[in-house]
Length: 123
Image 1: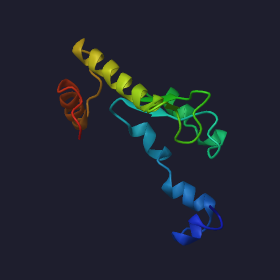
Image 2: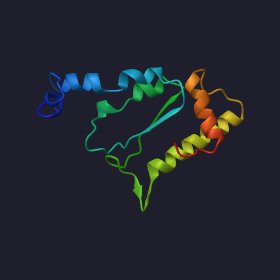
Image 3: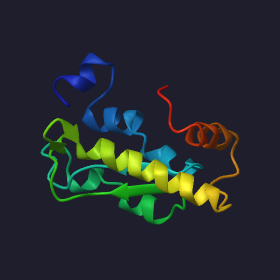
């Protein structure tokens, strides 16, 4: 990133690029159930990239770090485990909502709930 990505996009160096391009600073503001799945054996991400503290401090941001999966991996034949896990997570949220659990007080949550109630139609 120091030699290519940062200079190409007008950043001082890799640290400047990471600071301004990272979503980490926004994680604490997540107000609807959100799942992040990233593998522990991702060859591109180092331990500092995993937002463990942010996930522990949030009721809405859920981090799952399976031991295997690589970088954008998780393939199982013709399916991807991460996609199946995302659908499972949404189903869990639908179940909680059906039980009357408020999953957020934010406006976008209403759209998420409507989408869940319609059975997750393609966007």
